[in-house]
Length: 411
Image 1: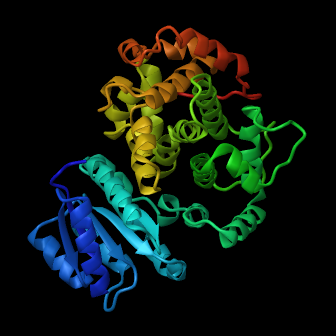
Image 2: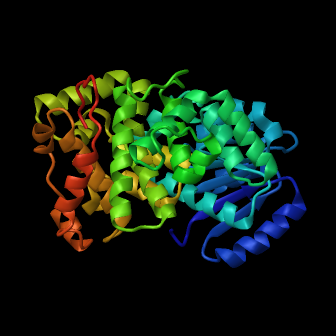
Image 3: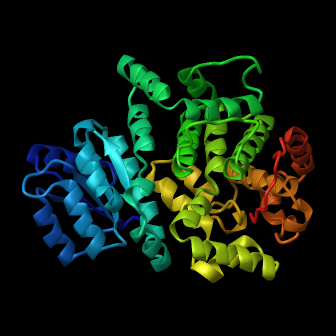
């Protein structure tokens, strides 16, 4: 993270600000921190000197956090915007969702605030791209922050009997999502074919990040009321294949369940940006697919040519909004071109890249499509996986579940 990062905190409770100032200065002494008691004061401060990240409480007199962040979004679109809120703020949050990059539920710890600020700094890097800013500026609030995902995200931030009951209620309200989660657990052979564990058991088997990723996918694909693993759509089939392959490789590497969970989640969400742009700018999205076919080039080059950005950047930007970890975001951002990643050696990025590569080869016209992409041999070698690559490929292809009714894909 940059040492000179500029962070603004806004809260009308002076005692909260004093305590936060003291703790933040000790935990992140190299950050340039500013604290304001009202939205009006913060706006004056931003006029004098813009910030990389603004973190605002929801409930403030005169102007609430949602209204404040809408103004920030208009005047300083490249500033990352984070809202601290409670359950009682649901309606106001909905009104400000389009202007908010991330929600943090209260109560929260200092570490929670540090992590959300760091995710905000990641967002800020993406928001320097004017093409990406333009895309996000036209996104409807319910697409940027689906209500169902926000509900699950809030529940998962806490633990205890009440959270258990809320998760049960959530699963009862969305049985199709439970069926989707069940399908992935079956594909990875983590549960017997004839078993029907409940949502909470599946969460424990697959992990929190995987469940969040599946919920995001399901929401962005319109929350279909039914899910049948034998009649799966192309848009859901591909991320499930990627997630399964990535998890299988991670287990071959004997990684801990928590690492498997994060790697799987990154693989599941690699192409959420593609789904997103197809809904928000369908003409440009279609043009990029056409260019990839006509010019016989890789999809990243085609997307940049037609839209000014590529789907990995959109995917990573969205996942920063949705609170996924730095490692997941980096793996998503560089899953096509790992040699461009800031981390010289990353086992998790390597595994996500491998899953992407093997899934492409296993798909319809896989050999032809794979020829468009140079294998990142240098990165594979630096990560010490050259000798394992063919083993991974055989394991992934051997377990691949083909789509019953394949359709054209351009990944």
